[in-house]
Image 1: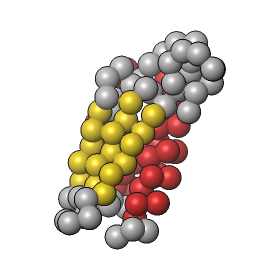
Image 2 (image 1 turned 30 degrees about the vertical axis):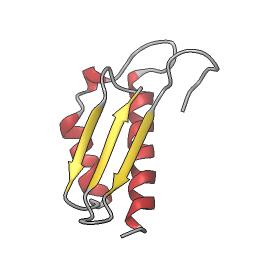
Image 3 (image 1 turned 90 degrees about the vertical axis):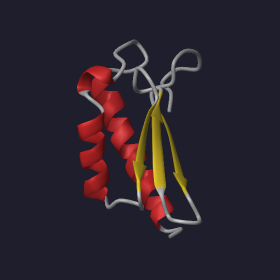
Image 4 (image 1 turned 135 degrees about the vertical axis):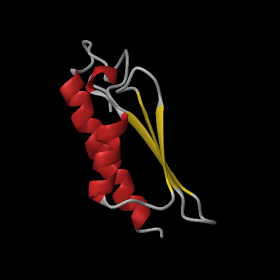
Length: 92
């Protein structure tokens, strides 16, 4: 997601699901000052994912610039994380 054609993206998330053991990984980037990877033994439920995001990513880690305010970036991070979780949970 990006608000502009040039410059920093607002949020970029990548989710993976290991077909062998069902491990779920989510990488959060662009919305945060550094990439952050979350690992789960299996696809979490929606609440578990939200809780892990809140515990792992402090509000101060979200970027604050012309490409998006921290609260907007956090909102998109949670939104896209849930979309990815929902899609990959169907593959299990």
